Each structure stands twice: as C-alpha cells, then as structure tokens.
Amino acid sequence: MSDETLPQADIHATLTCPMCGTKQKVLMPPEGFQHYYKCTNEECLADLAPLEGKDCVFCSYADKPCPQRQLHPDLSEHHLQSLL
Image 1 (spheres, one colour):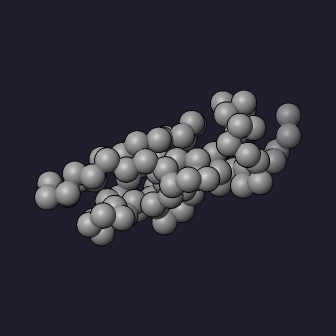
Image 2: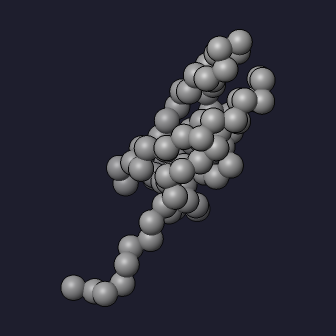
C-alpha cells in the first residue's frame, strides 16, 4: 500500500442565485453532478440549471467548481461521467 493520500475535493460551497443574488452555503455531492437547484429565497425560488458549457449548477453559480471538476479540471464532462 502507498502512503500517498488521494486528493480530496472541498464539498463546501456558497452558491449565488443569478436572479436575486441570494447566497446559500451548500454541501455539494461528492460524486456526480447536480444539474438543478432551486433558490432558497422565498421571493425568488428560481430554478437554476447549468450555464451552457458548464457541468452543473456549482460550476455555474458557486464560489468553487463541483468536486468532480476540482479533482479532474481538464477532463470533458463526457469523460468525467465515465469515471463515476
């Protein structure tokens, strides 16, 4: 066995709604992508989806990319999906 530790992704993020600016601290799923998120501001409740060319809502609207993108920044979404 190797004594090397595997890289760890940070699953804590702050997601900002592009419609109203509400910031929400969230835990990102460590595996896979989250394609939809509902704003928590009761006056907004916008349904967020990834921006074109982005893997998920975290890569689109959070202060850091999703865990899969953190660990594999250079892979395409298709290749990332095959790792899951």
